Length: 291
Image (cartoon, rainbow, N blue to C red; front, side, top):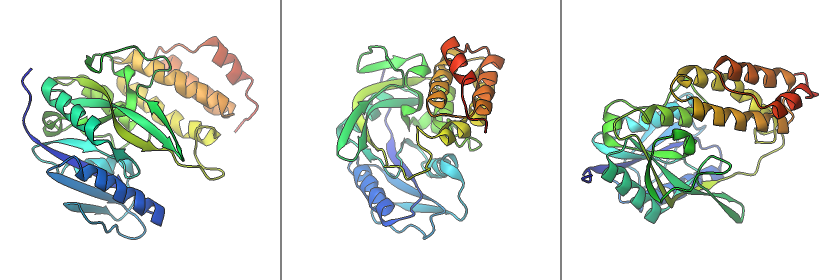
């Protein structure tokens, strides 16, 4: 396939509450600049003090917090005629891997691209590519026809998909990455995967009571958004939803989520024809928390 020619923009949504957040944002901007983009847009999602940074082409500010999807969309709207890298403010683009991912996106004429990534927590780093516990072995450059293979790893949007109006669903505060991935898989060119590490994701130390994977709040906050995601995609992407549903249910049981929230999630699964493994049904029935 002939490589598509065009520019590149980077969108960085940000909510800066502290000096540490500011430092991470500046690091993200430096990593974006190494890609040589035509444009860098920072979207300030109602930070207490308006963001001031150098090295960007524009800053779009919200006066009230509207969430990551709205912030990403506002930035994408500034990127006319280019492919778009969506980079969170606390993450860092890896130049070589990102350039290869952009090249693959263009060579394949794809709507979106998923990439290899590294999770960074303190002094440790862990490679994390695909969202399956036992991901399939795939070549480093391959067009993936089954979007459940990579879930929310997508962060590159192709120019034609952007111009066709592909955006994040602003009604979803959770699973918005999965949603846009599933919708993009039905567009011309579909989705591609580049295994080169193109992103370093920062995993933050959680304060007591924060919404981390081991807290019941993590699961409870995702029950209703998953129901909405399922209603949108059950007819066309049942395998992807089943995989995600099982991961979410497993985490809910392990975190000690309430019986009510676990049962609500399982009702959603059954309503859309998604099987509930008996092991997790039993463990949900034995959950001791009632609210």
